[in-house]
Amino acid sequence: MADTRWLTESELGAWMAYLRATHLLERRVEEQLKADSGLTHAHYEILAKLSASPGGQLRMTDLARKVVVSKSGLTYQVGQLEKRGLVERADCPSDERGVLAVLTDEGTRCLEKTAPGHVAVVRAFLIDQLTPEELETMTRIMSKATAAMAAAPEGAPGGKADTARADGRKAGGKKTKKGRPASA
Amino acid sequence: MADTRWLTESELGAWMAYLRATHLLERRVEEQLKADSGLTHAHYEILAKLSASPGGQLRMTDLARKVVVSKSGLTYQVGQLEKRGLVERADCPSDERGVLAVLTDEGTRCLEKTAPGHVAVVRAFLIDQLTPEELETMTRIMSKATAAMAAAPEGAPGGKADTARADGRKAGGKKTKKGRPASA
DNA sequence: TCATTTTTGTTCGAATTTGAACCACACCAT
DNA sequence: ATGGTGTGGTTCAAATTCGAACAAAAATGA
Image (cartoon, rainbow over all chains, first blue to last red; front, side, top):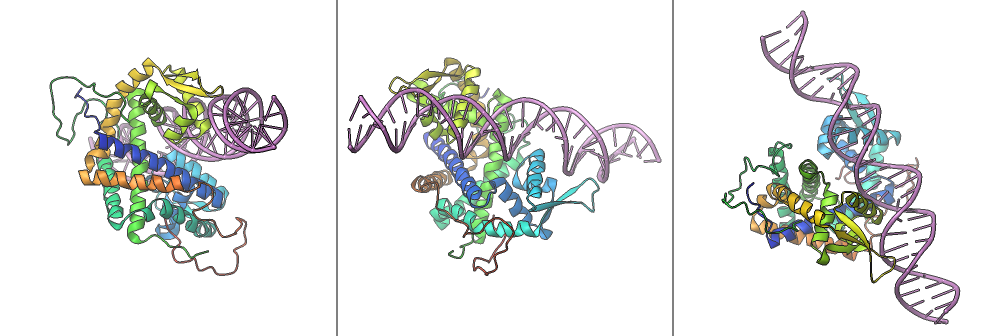
């Protein structure tokens, strides 16, 4: 029960700004894609990852990891994309149980047709709003966060016992975890 | 049909890093909240916004805007929170049709009990990873994006696929928009 | 070689989310 | 007031998402 290190004014502000912006941006991206080509952002990300891979193909698990989605979620989405003819499933030659998601020609065309509008939104609301330094800093920030999460065993830490952590906390004696109810 | 301004190497890198980090972070936050107190991130955000509001209450529409969620989505979530006794609905005194979502005492207790773990995750994976400058820059970046979106009439701009129907037809004329199929 | 443990994908059920369709009430200009 | 328009919330159907449970096919190792 280490007593909580609440977020400072500016840290809270950063987190709030982050939350708001990411939600709004996701909404915009989704809106544009849906209206412009009937795709969801999830669809787009899948097509994009496939397109960026050699042979336009990737195994389900790898793809799932790349787009950061659950296995079942990917199974569902690939199924949808398959119905639309944008992706096809193929047996994995090296692994009997494996399944390859393969970008079809139509999938490529769809992506090429959709990309301009998508990029326009990403630019308009994010990229073009930043200075070169800010862009660089954002990359650094997001990379750090990703690295931190990649290092953490995704199933235990966080809330309870503050077992192994790298931050030098004030290991105080008082269990005064109170101090600010409304946090984020 | 201006021919698309694709993302440069670093811009694409920034966007990819952003996407990956936000997805992973959302996953972590969701995981921690669920495991630690059975709440979803959506739940938490609602409770937090209410808690931060005078009287612990907010009208449905205002709350929906604050947490950036659809009206129907909020109706559903508040319904869930009401079942758990964390929130209550009350008639809005000033507007007959209005509905107030009010944080209950139990809701407050739940938030206080949950906040530490949540904050720990936000810190561990994002806040504590950044230098003071980076934190400041992140706030600036997210604020700019939010501002840009607030200014845009959320229904038209961005990119509109130049008249192409989703049907077969590969549209003969070669458009100059080519240059890079795989974008994001 | 054979049993044990992992890894891969899919299936299933439950929980969410969104937009469209709808009432009830508020606002505004006539 | 009074008809027209705009808001605030909810309801509804459809689409997604996730985690747990499974079946098959590797990978391990004794």
